[in-house]
Each structure stands twice: as C-alpha cells, then as structure tokens.
Length: 346
Image (cartoon, rainbow, N blue to C red):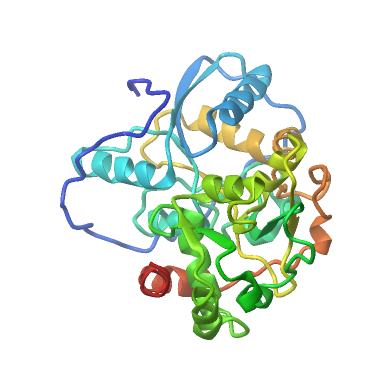
C-alpha cells in the first residue's frame, strides 16, 4: 500500500460530516498465531503505524523491532488520540484507512472500530502469557501497557499525602488539585465514566471533588508539571509521567488510591484494509513479547505480562488494585460522563 510518510505534528484534516453507515457486530473468529520463540525474518515490506506514543518512545520501539525484522520499514504518524481518531474517520469516509496498525487510546475506542468491521482478527504469539484483562476475547486487539490514573503529590509541599479518591474531597485540598480535561485527554474521558459507574464513588464523590475547585489542565503532561512545580501540588494523572519526573529529580511522588485505579491499556490492532498483514502481525507480536514488554518497562510503563518486572519506583502488579468496569457500560456512558464532568468542573 503506497502511503505518504508523516512523522510529527497533529494532522489538520477536515472530517466529513458523514454518518457512520452499516454498523455491525464483528463475529469473526480470531486467527491465533503459532507460538514463536524467535521471529522469522520477513521479506521486505513497509507498514504504517498510527500512534499516540511520544516520539522518542516509538522511535525506540521501531529500532528494537528492526533488530528482529531489518527488512520491515515502519513509517510512523504520531499525534494525540483525538487527532488520530479524526484522521481515521476522514480516511475511512474517502476510502480505506491509510494505516496498517493503530497503537493508541483505550479499549473502548477499539471496541468501536471492532463493531464497525475496521479491524483484522489476530491474536499475537504468546497471548496466553498476557494479562487477560487487556486481551479482546474476540481477538481483534490487545493491550500493550497498563497506564493507571493515580494521585500525584509534591513532596516538598504535601506533608500528609492523600491515599484514596475520597481523600481528595477533603476541604484541606481546596485549590490545590489539578486534573486533565476529558475533552482533550482520552484517558480522562474514560476515567470520568469509570468514576461515575463506581458504586463507591459515583456522582456524589465527583460533586464533592468539584467543590474543591480543581484546576483543569489540557492534558496529563501539564498536570504532572504543575505538581512537580508545586503550583498545584496534588494532581490526578497517569502514573508513568510521575515516575519520569521523579527520576529526573523533581520533588514528586505517587499514591495508588485504595479504592482502585482506572487504567487504559494502549491497545494495538491491525486495520482490516492492510495489505501487509504478515509484517503488521510481526509488529504486534513484538509489542507484547517479553522483549517488547521489557522495553515498555524501561520506558516507565507497567507491562501486560508478569515476567518482565515493573519500572523502578512502581509497585508490583499484584499490589495495585485495578478497576475493571464493564466496557460496554463505559462506552455507552462516556459521552454523558464527560458532559457531566464539564458541568461540575468547568
């Protein structure tokens, strides 16, 4: 498939106002790859990956993949999740999606693409070794990282850090908290739905939290920076950003709330329109292999398999309480949850 390589920057695309047509539930059986302990060298091929990974991290992933598959060229388009989904929508309304592989977002996004028959059924080699919570039972996508949203705090300002979501509603934290905007951050939108769906939190907790008037930042990055700088010394943010700032010397640490943490898994899937299926499958295999997951840990992510450890400063996976809501419920309620969040906080 001939494509134009685009490496950086958000795409400015006009999304045609076409309604999605012919939605149907995909029911194909997953193709299961044979167990592979060593990658078979593939013939020369070029694949395009759409991803929200930071540029330096996706560059390292591609470099490591090419050690096993030197003849597979990986062209990368990197952007935020919102820009990626807009680009995919624009491409599908004018033809086929121009990517072979999508590595971004959350399971809900992939569930939508699965239901619209955009994805190829493929279960990667070694899928039985993965955390089954991130594996699509129909075999159309698989998570590649565990990215929880946690509480971050500035160790130079906060003497007694909050350890639960409930703690954040204490008036002592009024004006001290920062959170990402769910209109911009896919993870924040997902979290809003999970919190509202949780019986121990729900709208009462969200209303009490709003009473503390958190500062709403554009995304997780500015939240973590505000905590590290002490301007808002408490933040609701994805955990790997905190570890990276702490490793760089910032006075910041993290608490995993006792009620459990919502998380996104940055799934990977192959578009059904690909004509480079073998090379795309090899890339997916690499991401969830022991080698690929070791690299994920080195990049400060929690892995989706338990034989590669966790990043320095992170708890063991068994010590983290994870919230695993019904994805169908979250998908059905996410838009309303974001609207309610905006009513309360903005």
